[in-house]
Image (cartoon, rainbow, N blue to C red):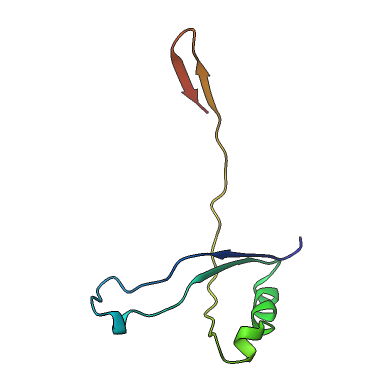
Length: 82
């Protein structure tokens, strides 16, 4: 599997803070890699990190994936989810 990097726009904010100067900046990057070691290598090679612009904290995350099917029968006005 080739490593996948996906950025998620939006700021991470401290819920209890009401003063703008206390709201931390930041964001979220989802990196799907073959191993934790590969993820650490990818993060270490990020030019934003090596230049000191960004700092990264790496967390393991188990993806909950799945699917479902929705079936709608208009004539009988019924629906089923499986």
